[in-house]
Length: 453
Image (tube, rainbow, N blue to C red; front, side):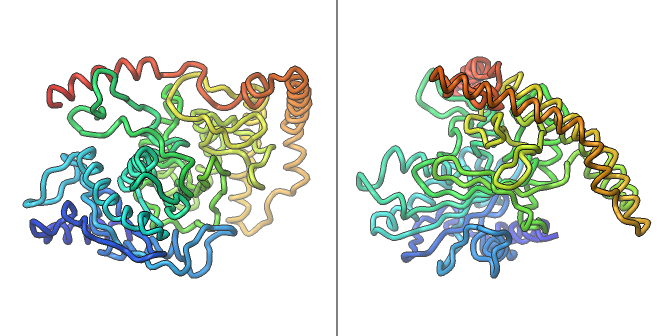
């Protein structure tokens, strides 16, 4: 697999990095105008080894032909690799004489390197694009926050700096580091997870200030984490997705199926569909596994997606696609902007929850039957039969649509649509936020950090 090859090549390259020439010292690189930097994920400090840089260019920056209609590309740019530490000690460390860096320390060093690389470009008025994957997406996030707070030279043209991020742990639409943040309350030092050094105070990637393209693999456990921790199926699925999805972006063979979720501010969000990681072992069983998976997937996916604030009702489309997946939606099926910190009792339209159940029940029968018919060389079930089975589902949607329209009109007439309209009430956000508990945890972590943990 390409991922394994990249990891092996990165390990060899890291082992041969002499002191004084490692990632921590790569801060003197400067590009010309209309060029870009490509950084690696954790375990790949040097993006130029093992075919990583070429794979990134082919899939996300400069494909020969766009993988899907409207894919943002960067023709004419000359991209180079920017070496950053990409360590996660004690789990992923570079061998001596390189320094021992925790995730937080590695990110901080990477931010310094990226800052010294892009600032000369911004000061010169040049245009630069930065690519980050996993840890380097977190590096990019912190650099954006720093630039917005303290522009180099007092000001610069933000239109000259673009970012392309994949597998972003700080994604505002489900990055695990945004679900459970911890901000300093006792002092001014960032809080990190004790003993593992994971930074918890960075927050979500800014959605405005820079043009950003964000790709997320569906059910990536680090970039697409559930909002409701009480949804144990969603939590287990995300945990498995960390292994099966997060490290596989350069191996996805279905980029043509990428879904454009929409834009928030200056950020365009794209989701790359994946099978449920929870069913990954079953799908390895060949045709038998496919039939079993097709029978189980609709209901499992429905319940798992509830953990993200999505009722699972495909009736309302998002940019021509079904409004079903691991992202929060409003009552109108549009991308919800407020999904962030974890919590309980996600606010979803009850009738759309019912419609989701009805639809999943039908697909749980139709999909495996169609698979069996396909294996036998027969045509799938006729559309007329499937439509008949979906009669109850469509009736529920008709009732729901009528009620939502009346509610919205009343809210507009009373001038309360922004806070009491259906899209404001049913927006996938938790009714009970974990923020108060997270604040308590932040104090505990802060004390442990002060004690050296």
